[in-house]
Length: 110
Length: 380
Image (cartoon, rainbow over all chains, first blue to last red; front, side):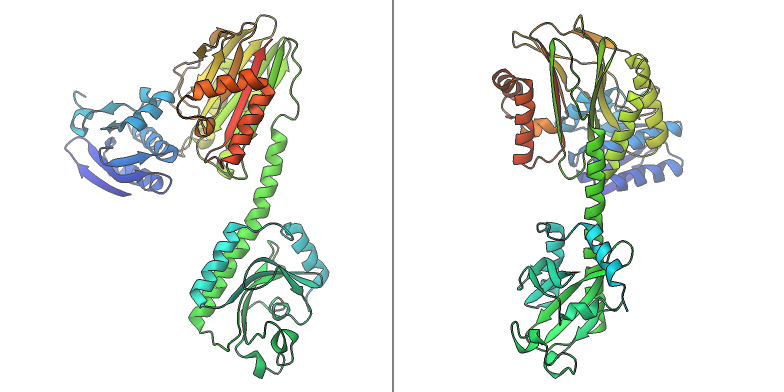
């Protein structure tokens, strides 16, 4: 898995490319923590180029969400594949890990 | 001199002698053959007067210990190499050199038990003389340390697995008017799911929890969840779940794991079910008329630390109904076209015990990728 990070004026976008599984999950966590300690706790994880997310990947998203909220920000997801959205819904995690159509719309209005 | 008795005890304690082949060890043996281009490779353990081979290529399962090259190897800490046995003062008349398999080249690195006792070797052999440079010696040592780790890990996992079995309910509670059955089959050696059930006065408490991931880490968390929920049965289920939620948040809050769970209190005389679903979503009532009623709520998984308030919901278990709860691993072994129909027909045809036995059979038979746990409580 490859991770691309881009910085916008008031949020950062992290894009996992490929499969987000036990192999890539620690890398995502580390990247989220880096972005937060760099002073940007508002993060969008853009899943448009993510082929697959397993439970470890989901765990990394949740871990990142907790870190972001602790730092006074939030972690949101964009362009979530249907299979991932289904898992989020089953676990009720869609209540806290909100999906947005695009990274640009994730922090729209707040 | 080596302490032969202590060495033998350490080897016996590893519990690896006469066990079936293990793919994790065989993998290293194959790799050694590829790397060194030798016809024979062995993971040899020195058991009393025999050499027993946990993994081997080009050799047999056993050979006598007397005269064995490996017996020299375990007497030292370093890699032992004989480049051409036919011209070696010590080995030129050795039965393995003069006779079958006519060895010329031997290189072995000792394998140690967790306490440091030298119990065996990883060795490579050839019928032609060869030399081994420093780089290759380093490689052989690395492979030996790898095998050593796998042999020790195996033992640790077996112990953990036994201990964990002991934490699953040993007996099925006797509940008048109900039939109970449950099973739990780990994907590997250790289960990341847990179920529990016990009577408390007129009620039956049932728990099923699934820790994200597989293996030893989740298993440790799962046993903590069980212990926490079992403590103080007089607590209402919402309080019990709130307590375990806080505990998990404290213990695993800074990791990326979480736990989904269903915690149920069944009032035995009336069949009234109080339940809390923490992001699990795999608890149902199968009505006597074949209708599936999902016991859904919107609770988050446990250990999220997001200040979730836990509220119990309720449902009725009427005569002929069955409460069915499983981990998501069950979905991997059900008929994907219609999993609900599959469960319904198995339950109807085989009854609760037959149905969970069938789930266990499917889980073992298909080498299910995830742990499979199922609990059924049927009201007669």
